[in-house]
Length: 409
Image (tube, rainbow, N blue to C red; front, side):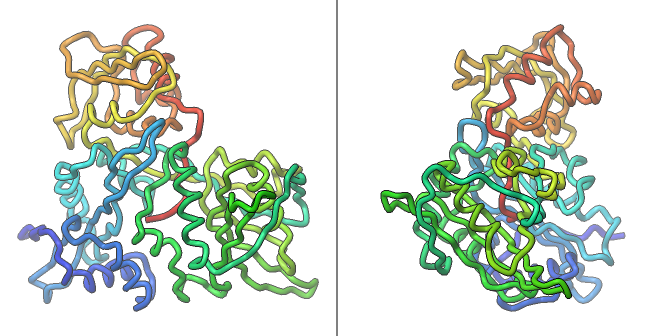
């Protein structure tokens, strides 16, 4: 069978790419969504495969977006890999493997990040599960939240009217939130876009702002509501996209509001992290309806650049023996040295006895500070070659703020 060629995409490929994504993810093509997604599409960072023997349809595609990612103590350029799909008629022909093998060596960023449609797909290309997500479906009749010490004032406005405040608050919080991505003007437009096809019977999106007693906007919630009724009365749902605040009082006031909207009985939050403060505010946390799932996957593309780009929770002096079949430039023995305070790291290739042995996917799993190298060691994925090296590495790679991805890109 003739190998189908891979080539970089052009702007003219977008209609075919959009159509392939709709088909691969079993969605009905929608012109409004098509144009919204076109606004962030980067043709020069996309790869396409057509099948000329079958009328020239696009059969496989992979792309990356140019954004920064917050990592422990820093932000780094990260390829946000997305729009990956293979036409169902062309599965099991190695097209995804070829796309990944082409894309990864060419990425200029030290790391790549993605959401996986299925968890088993990307670890075989060196990605590690670097964060976990929680989803909430809270029964508002069974959960009580405390009163804030300084309740402030709330007002609800269309998202477009509050865009400046949203961006300011998000950017103020982002440096200390591993897993959060930068949002340019284009990405804010994408985030706030509200096509009717995405509402699924719910209202348009709304923004509720919290103002402190001094009159400063210090928090917001982005949400919509969905009406539902039973013979017993209203059963509406409040669907929260994100709630961000500069202090605990603003955060608490926003969630108290979301839990008290008339004619609703459920509050849902699809994407949150293990450190979501709401988990510690509810008087009956079981009724928050928490479910656990996989979050962001990280791929280390340039090992020394990636490991020196983040900060660490403790000083380190370790020799890592790393395997990386797909990117052999990462393989070998590397000495990672972190100064007291964890704020300066060096990583150089050495010919010395190793303290730990692992794959790049294991380092990727710990890269955002959430995955535990000790847990990976207990699973047999990280091997300790010097006594106490694993405990030191696990402590150093940890971080005080658990990572979370709060938006799908």
